[in-house]
Image (cartoon, chains in turn brown, cyan):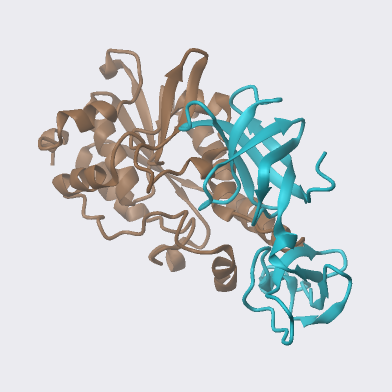
Length: 233
Length: 151
């Protein structure tokens, strides 16, 4: 299917899904972090529609085969095949980046250490802000991208002193608490096109695209308590 | 956890904030600050909550709800997207908590009103008081202070 199939999205919705890049977009390259879920697939579709060149990247996390389908699992709702299928359908390149060893070293081990020292850790924050962003950031730069777009529900707003991080417009979807450690340097390069959209609009876009991922695990930051996650390990 | 850290034998005593040993617990991993359920101690005059986990002594420290009141927190590994020193902010200290008024003094966050359920290891994320949608940054809660020790 061709990218031009996004025809029924309200113009207002699309206008707010802005990649904040200098015109003309045909000269720009957007790297999209694709998890295989609805949100990042919609970002990929919006990027493809923008006219820029798009490259999808997916991080292969720990023990992928066994845990990828577990609904609500933190950090594990990835499905490389779904991401690849979306990229194929939208007609852009897709790379898989092996991430398992570093993820194990930094996120899982740090979580275990924190827990044993009597703290209440938030694995998803470490996961989002640590290895994921650092690796994706470097990968996108290596690919010559003008920006790295993700499916996070936060907004990047251009203020008088540069890019600012803001809550998503949909309070039920806001992920700003989990992204506080985004550095100014990262923020300059990142784009969050879903932050200005309601979740229902995102679902509508997904449906219109026939993305086939509507039932995939999403909301990886909210479903499991740290204790529940650790007990599964 | 047992698979990741087989050496993690962290069983120990349940101790009241007043120093009384109330019993034994089955491991620090089973407890979270602010938790009320799962403290299997009978005959107490008022409900007890987990106030603190002392990893060094392997103690679960429990107390009445008022012992959970925190007036400030020390933040580590802070990331700032704006100047925050001395600034009045709205601080969110748990993922589901409503942001509360506070101010920043060095590496400390001082709440206008005592806050409950502030736990080391959670993030404190600060928002602008005028534009409440703007994230100013945040840090990891390293330590909390009661009313007497905050200033």
